[in-house]
Length: 84
Image (cartoon, rainbow, N blue to C red; front, side, top):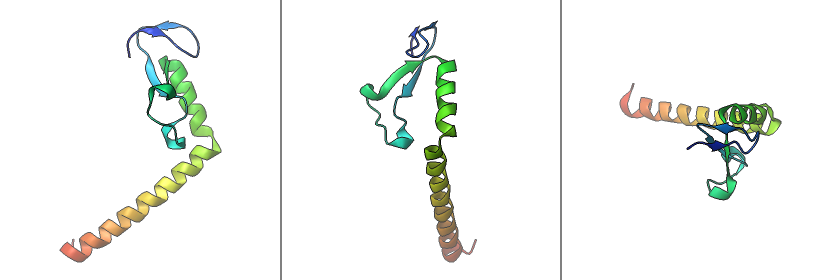
C-alpha cells in the first residue's frame, strides 16, 4: 500500500498493510468496507491478539483435522491406484 496514516495509531508511514477488520477466518469478507490500512507494528499487534483468541484456536484445530483427513484419504487412494 502507498504511504499514509495508520488508522490505528495515526502515525504517518511510508508503507501500510491492508488489514481485514473482521478476519477472513472469522467470516469477514474481502471487500473495501472490511479493510483498514495499518502500519506494520499495528498490523502485527492485531494479528497476535487475534491468534491468542479461543475462536482462532478452535478454527485452526478444525482446519488441522480436515487437512489430516484429506491427506490420509489421498494417501490411501494413491496407494490403492499406484501402489506407492
